[in-house]
Length: 338
Ligand SMILES: NC(=O)c1ccc[n+]([C@@H]2O[C@H](COP(=O)([O-])OP(=O)(O)OC[C@H]3O[C@@H](n4cnc5c(N)ncnc54)[C@H](OP(=O)(O)O)[C@@H]3O)[C@@H](O)[C@H]2O)c1
Image (tube, rainbow, N blue to C red; front, side, top):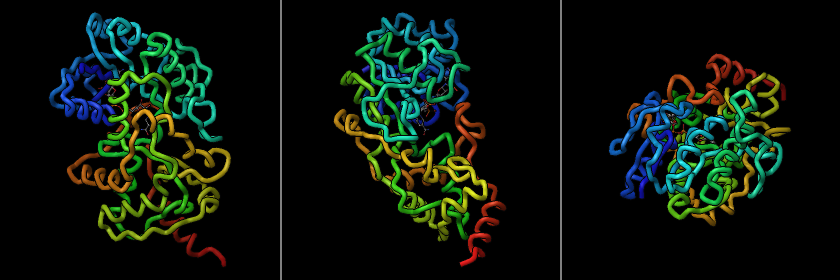
């Protein structure tokens, strides 16, 4: 198999390249050379996907599978799909559950339409989720049933470039009393980048058509289980103190970013971990236990792995609560009346 990976040097793309090489595939990557070194063994082409001149390097080439990990603007994705239309490839596009009309306010069943967004929309024509839906359309308009749309859930694992799990692992490794948000029993739904990469390559090779919610099964971890895994992995002896959601909201702790992966119940928090995954599972999606993801991410950090200083995409926030604020909230929690 001959794979073109648009991206390939940071997180999900690295795992995709590594998995493909392990299968004996020939791998070509196309990126600007800014986000990290290419995986050893690939043919690395340099270029900006927003430039038709740079994309000319791909014109006239044949591929069996394209995996596109870095499409955020429909008009830009349109350029690559036009250049690759005659390549003979099956096009696997990495989208997001945010592209759907329901997430995170309601459950996300399989087979939902994406949000309204033109396939030639520009960067200012919508937010991250809406633009991802436009990118999906740009792919399917050109590739039709020769495409797989992979709506990823929240991705963790070694090389994570947003810095969510790495922030928690770093905090927990420092030990002491750690502010743990909300209810430890809160069911979550997370996916390991290596499992997602495996699914995408299988879907590309088998030319699986359609749009999939691609994440772990509902409830494959809870806030308490993976934070506990982090305490075990780091061996720090940190003590988790569970502080109620309302208490944190009243103190203006920003969900999702100050305490990564924490979303309190309410308008946006009730269905954030509530996507149907049956279609992806039928198409080959398999998820390892999150305990392994946490341990392997800590191993990667022990070898010097760190998320980049700057977030990889404009939509990716900086993570982490100020240590003084964390300690102040813990003191207030212990001093609360009753
Ligand atoms: N993280 C999550 O929890 C989450 C959840 C849902 C969906 N997703 C989606 O999953 C994907 C994650 O991607 P990743 O960062 O892990 O993939 P990656 O392939 O490991 O890294 C991104 C690649 O894109 C390349 N790139 C960026 N802009 C480019 C441009 N203009 N032209 C050419 N290459 C460009 C980067 O290289 P250069 O910078 O060197 O060009 C880098 O190689 C994204 O599409 C994201 O929306 C993520």
